[in-house]
Length: 188
Image (cartoon, rainbow, N blue to C red; front, side):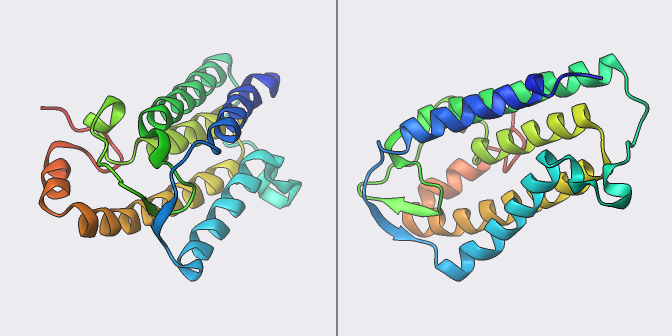
């Protein structure tokens, strides 16, 4: 019904930006252990493969959930772009403190600007929103299962990251938690 380019282009934009910015980070001071990272990575790999590999054309995974409609496709594409935009905005504000792994960087600062003023994990929220949009636009059972893997993986990762941030920033991080939402924005 729709060209996959409309879905794939925002993800490609994100990957290019991520690759360019990956070289401008500070040295790592503390990082999660390899076993801790493996579960999250495995879940994300399964999730993104199911999301983008047309559900691997295995049984019901490739079947549509709903009847394809233009409004559903347009909403899915819009949510994908919105999620990618949130990731890019958050990544820009995180700057030199970003890492693909859960880490504390040298002279690490608690970021509270941009999307971090309302969300503690806007990059993860952005990925989840983009995955939701992509799943809606593609509309396959495999994409729905992919979304479950992706949301679970980023939720686990965010909780592990919070433990590390709480240990590093103590009371300042606890106050930040009171003003911000975990994966959904907190207003008021």
